[in-house]
Length: 466
Image 1 (cartoon, helix red, strand yellow):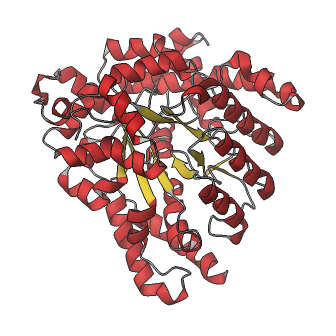
Image 2 (image 1 turned 90 degrees about the vertical axis):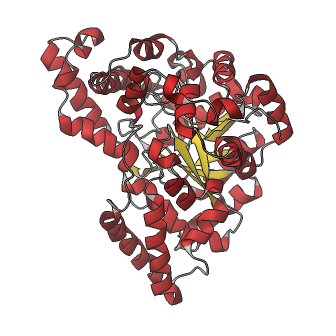
């Protein structure tokens, strides 16, 4: 096998430049752009305040500087590809969502807008992404934004559009949710799932999944207002000097919302226990940026539910079986414990794909090589290859020969990643990994299982009735 690793990152982000909003958004909604612009003066400042508050624990000037000046690859494909080459990434999934550019009504961080605007905004992002990155779909693995999915025929038509334009995945229905939207196991979604299978489009559940439309923006506003009041100014630099004015509960909300939100785990049991995979056995589901340290205990629990209620459930296989055949976890800025023998074997080495989460503050960027060297030191070659890229190639049906050709030019060697003693890495850099991405957090295990089981039982009442 090649000495070079094929790296396929399961997580990165891109955004439509604000000056192009009017070009890609249906003119019917142009009157909402001034409001959206105002929201996106508040949003990036609030996220910067959260980052500044966290970075106070382990300041690292090189990390702060790159996030001030080096994120243009968020919208510029040439700069992004140059950065991918520098970090040894052959290909990566591209999602919407970054505070520095915001999104057009369709993200969890947006204020609540009319559903027609949400639909138009999602389509605008998809069409911009196709134009900006579609020339290199071997390296830019595009994942579509999703609308409110009120009109199932229109939602299916969008699946065919994105497939025709080289996308490999779509955010799933309920990424943003609203009252009256059927659960994922409802037959309402069967035409949508059939289209995804027919057109080889995977379903992605990303951090923030299951958020009520408009729910998060009030917290964003509260963060902004607290720093503005403390600083007596709305100048961003002055506000950043008062990041400690952000209420702990606001910061804790974002930690919960991004990484610990149980709603984002819901598709796992709705697809498995709800019979979706039984009706659509070739459908694929990837859970991204919601950690993986809860999965072993959750799969054990879901299997026990299956065994105790199998006669009344519309499925013939244990959830863990479907996990191993139909699912992948996008291990964004992977924690040290998640690469341990216990965790990776229980989750399944064939079901993990590393993600760098470019260009978010918590991401491995711009230190991906050092992060991986510390993470995977001593892990067997074949397992590193799977978690770094081979699993993504298989799951998304990518052109391995083409990616191997790219990796021979820019990819890290296997020895560099799992055979280089990481003790040379600066202590302050490792501390920064912890501050920005929770690198040394312990595994969650069964900590959230009581909360999760209550949601499972509620869903199963609907499954059995249907």
